[in-house]
Image (cartoon, rainbow over all chains, first blue to last red; front, top):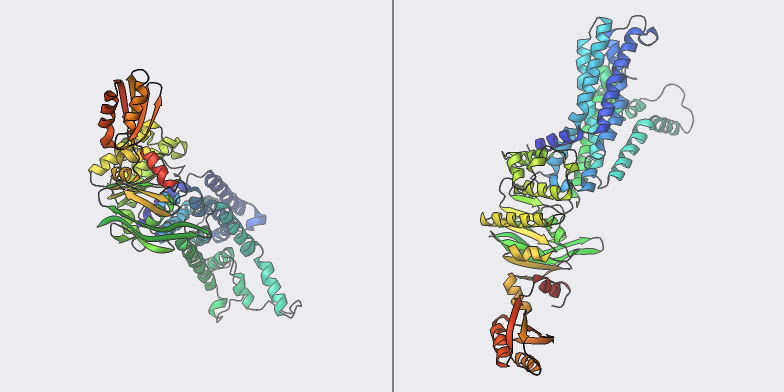
Length: 276
Length: 305
């Protein structure tokens, strides 16, 4: 249970970060703004805004915010400790490197999840009060899936941070991940489609496998997973009644799980072998 | 069983061979001074003991446990003041103590813990605002939590004022009295000399000497210095110098006005005084100074031996 001490320490430490407080205030404000706009502005929420639509609307704000906030609050998590030398305090104590990494992962997830889930909850409360109706199940789903998504993003950034001993390199890795996997992924997929069609614009719809590739960015798999619980939100492209697993929204759940496990393992492999 | 046992420890960092076959055995309950100039490999050796760094070859055990395979069990029984550490700037002294006690499964009172090292009044201030000396005291206080069996102190006096240095020495003595093994690295020798049962000298990644301070002194053969101020006229002064030169155990004699300075083995000191009186000089005053560890250390560290 050694990771608990690390998680608690890390939580206490990271929650005092000014950047985190700034981001938290921003997210709560954004969440309330989205809720009010959805409930009162016809152009956004339609003439008859539903509480389920409110949840979908709020979910749209989660992806970008959590990904950026995770990069900002977590890139230093291990690389920064190695660079400054505080890792010598952490690891002079009876924590294995795996426990230290796990503690970091869970501590930072808590630090990030509290303002995110709190912001969403405030948004739901404000929006539902204006609408006079609550979509209970979609709201619970939103909170749970957001928590899982937050864990995945923290795992990515902490995992990358664990591979290096300098904060600058950790920041570079985290930003590079964001740019390649979040910003330019669509372009990459389209380029593949173009190449697969013999370097011509494909006729007809996009091939099935693009759906799978499109799930790779964590923010996409978050949206796809949400569609499982909030019908009509962003229905999966190729999803039909008898579609194979890889064409159903469950792929989103699978991809999120991979993003939780894989970066943490990669980070552990590098961190546990490193000379500090 | 040895508290710390190093056998043929080698560590290669790229082109640099930081440790070049370190063999060392530290007995349980002793205060061991680990000496060497900066860059000799002291911190690398300690990093291996704590599994911060993996040796290229050779083995290290602490309390009979392998430093790599059983590192967490070792660290559960060890208190560490590492070199080049950095406190968590945003956490208070109290939170630092709580982190250590939680990590080691202890139940300690943070204020009492920090009283031991003289920073109890800063218990609720963030460590980022501590002075260098306060940081070092907090870190020492954290190392002492839970009464560890082994205390590893890497350059514990760096950043401390003379009062702090004295306090560190008192802490080491108190821990030693409790039976704690203390492994204490330093390049400032006077601090080691005063508290250590034995010292080991590291040079360029190798242990070049291990002995008690007395034993090293004998081995090096650096003599005591005896300064005798006399009343007397020429030619008695010159006769006195000649007489002293003839005493067994005297290696050199010089005269500075009416002061005779002799380098002499301990057992020859009285003979020197007799020889001066026999030469017809009256002794007005004399002082004797033992060879400092500094001189011994330089003799080893500079490779004279």
